[in-house]
Amino acid sequence: MAKFDEEHIAAKLHELEVACHRRRLPVTVQRRVIYETLLRRSDHPTADQLYADVRRRLPGISRTTVYRVLETLVELGLAMRIPNRQAVVRYDPNTEQHHHVICVLCDRVEDLEGVPLAERPIREQAEVTGFEVLDCTMVVRGVCPDCRDDYRRRTLANSS
Image (tube, rainbow, N blue to C red):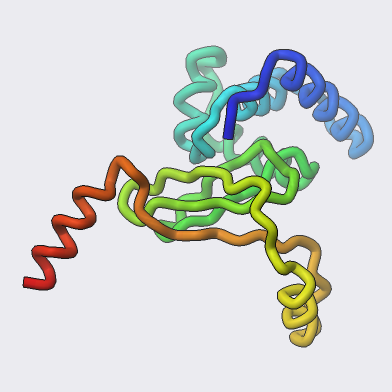
């Protein structure tokens, strides 16, 4: 995911204000700073990574506040959670439908945009279970370029 430009960040912060007013939530400094920090990152950060960044601007902020604000951003539809194998949730401010690829060694996350997914058969099959499907995205697990050589060495060592 590319970092957003200043114009896009300003537009997204305005969306935060509108969404908060609609839900009768105050537009706090903490909400603005946490959302802006998320928008400026391109690595699908964890809550703890965001907490470390936000503390530079708001030294007195608590970890709990960061977690709560992130959950509010998800509820408002301004961010999405990306689960991974270690149960550490990562956050993505890009709420347009897209998929992700996650490295199984270092947990690096990258967006897969413009990748067509045969959503209709998946949606229909899921609805057989009685669920009303709201979204359909895919997570692909693999090995990133930075970890590929290490992965190959491990694989060769294990097969010997």
